[in-house]
Image (cartoon, rainbow, N blue to C red; front, side):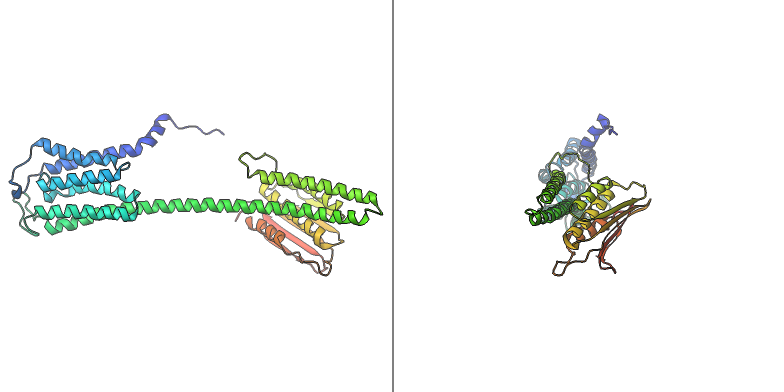
Length: 398
């Protein structure tokens, strides 16, 4: 099903959305700064109000740098800080209206904390708090002096410095939290990607092991047979060589398919499944191991389950060829609506001095079953042979 592309206006809005949000924020900051500049100045400034154009220019000077806060946070912070200090020092914005320019400083300081390192953004925070606090204290007649008649309250003084630190500190803390959250999200995404790569490597390694172990096991057995009967029974030696040829060709085809997944454009060949089990059994029979094979049921499991069943049977037959000695083997696959059961049993007795069957092959089979939260058992049975049982539930992965 082909995905429908979003309309052009939606794509444009997604790209321009952050910039439009900054323009609206800048307009709000400019309006707030203009309104604060309209306040009547304190008596220390002579009680005279500046011309209206100065109030308008102050508001624009506070709001315009906010538009650049995402792209040039340091420049925006420097400009807003200079305008704020100048407006407070000259009385264009009274000290009791310091909250208005603090909104502009907090907005750009947030961007600095969200994009820069903690050390650099903390230095910017300290510089902003220091400059504005010094200006607020310098314009106050005393730390807790009487207020101007126009305000009806107390001059900010030291309390104004505390207020400045709280407001700017809160803006910086929010930006720092956003930056840390983004960094955590990036690390989590990298970990997920790395885990996926590791899982894929393990899957390919498991596939290569199963293919190589099965193919090389059959080849080794047939090569030993051919070497043993070459002089007295050349016809049987030729038959063994034909088995070696067919087995090696099949192994190479499977290896090419598995390793092809590492290429940018792998060949789209089907993965082994239940339909390939008869050919696998025939190759094992050609190695001199009689195999009884039966499939019960008609349900069709998912492709991943079919591949796991194939690899479990393949590794079990490989172990029979390599370790069981002269033996008869039975392979039963039961296809139920909710699960697939596999049982591989041989009646061979392991010769003395032969290494135990426990190895990477059994580990790989156990891991394949664990993916589907199934049950797996492999070991000697009461009759002296060896049995592998696996149950793979359908519709569950772990």
